[in-house]
Image (cartoon, rainbow, N blue to C red):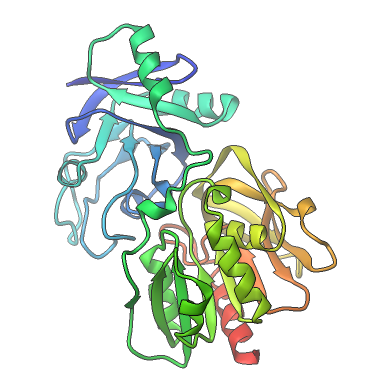
Length: 359
């Protein structure tokens, strides 16, 4: 079935529908990863977004139940150049098209993804609408205009867990994870490092968290505008005052920045991919990292007597990591657990372990 994706600035890209047979809207972004489409599709951080894959062939190794990063896909739609109908991998259990259809996710293929990506890079991320209807441009633009954006909307409440649960039963250090849309690979990594992991909803207060007697708290990744989730930074601020070791990842990094009195701002088209170069300012080393965020903490809005920048993005010089100078608090804007992506940044979990060890 013929389909099209309409952008809010009037640009229209033609394609064919696959996956769920319905219409959808969201902020259109692009991801430059060559592999790992299943992990990307199931990353809760993409709630409210239509993801364009820049690699031209997606779906060639199928889908399996082991590589998911959450309980279901949360993205609004998927845009690809070609969706492979052949899934050639011994672990594959179903095709990408079947998986999207089963989970009610819209897909559109046959799109000139190079042109779409270039358009977003030049014009910035914007709202889009995927439809199969035969309608005029004015009607389609009206649909895009009525679509929900990201700014000022709490999307975390749509992806967080419903109640407290234990990921595993034992470990040397007890880590409480505030679930803003946590990727399962983060939980797996903590468990591999001999941590007992308890996951709590993002609405959990400081009293509830402290009652679990944590050695440390991890602020997870998640979707949308960090400034729209005001009570999480309040909880984090109270935890900081209790001198609990804290590690923030992506949205968790942004929440930490807000808790420390800083501000966040929206990037032009965000960082989405597995090839982002980051420099560790403490030793000069370079890591290639997996990233997925559209907002950034303004390092100049933070008190330099308390907070220092530890990592910087070499593509655009934006803040990628920070730590408190006196308290056991650190965070990064990227994904040290990778999934998908390189494992260059895995050492950051060890730094978090050391914070708990020395607390």
